[in-house]
Length: 306
Length: 173
Image (tube, each protein chain N blue to C red):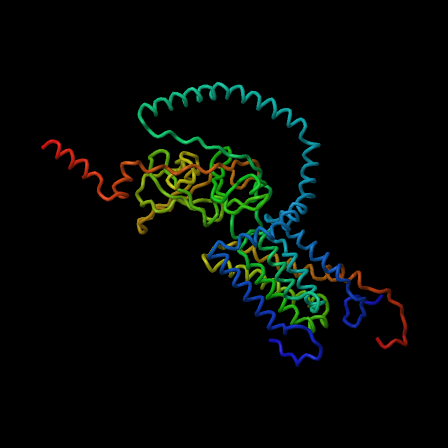
């Protein structure tokens, strides 16, 4: 492409040499970043420059938005305040009853010797902006390593699961939404209890895969987390079935779902703490760990009987 | 008045800080929350191509690599996706820089269009490798808008280098 005479002046390495060097470096970066998770330190270092710059770029936009809001929303805020007060009053009774039911439920569970459902704590964060990458669905929130957020924590809003923390930077962290193509959430159908896994499609919808064409699924069915992965706590709403295609030439039904949470909205979210995965009961653990312990007491007992 | 974009016109030497500031402003423009508008051009690519054509000795593949790294982190994309695209396009722009300046501005913009399409196409191919997600045809509108911006951009960025024109009929150029 570029036939140059031998250089008369010293100008550093030839363009083609530079091109091959930087192209190889880029390809190496691509390979390492997609196969191994070892470049997070580099990412975090560069992010110390980019995140302030990004926030500086967002400042004028936020300022315009806020100033517009300030002048228009005083009366609206008052309205909202009275409405919320009323809602709180009407909810108070429900909350009280729920607390009482919860206590009762806990007592009953103890009686039945069922493992208590773990309570999950979380911390509130705010979505700052959506990542610009058009190939994935990710958002950036304003809590990071400083607030002890770690990769893998589930993220919810008031209506259900939003996604999962995938990368943590010093002051911000990155959340992959459940609608991202690479994100999967183990769920169960609330009506039937059928377990499955829901995958993002990358276009704002979700797909429930690997259910047979004659599976008992209806439009409007609610999917909640099954908690089998040990990451998402059990029973949180994820999505609602909106469209089912049953084609007998395929062995699986195509089931499309819409997320329950405001996945594409901006606002407050909650990053839930990790909870311990359900423990395997001791009785099941021991035979695998210590060979054949069940036989010994049996043998002893037999000896004693004799 | 003398047209400003002719290659025979003698410009003041470029100030390095002006290049740096224009690239930084391009980064800030890219950081604006414009992901809802797919027709937004990639400002960093556009300004990088401009300086790679005008000043290939100052703005080269090293700077393209650094800018790409910054964009990769800011975009939360794969590391190396923007760097590869920017390095390739910086090389291509530098290699046509001797020829392109002889064309009028409109035709220069036509030269810039394929460069901007290369930027999108390289990133698309990189992301398509592990598993295809089609971002839609609107993904490729940005380069056309960017090429249309070439004419105003040339005026704006060369403004500090214009010296006052004094007519002197005895001067050879």
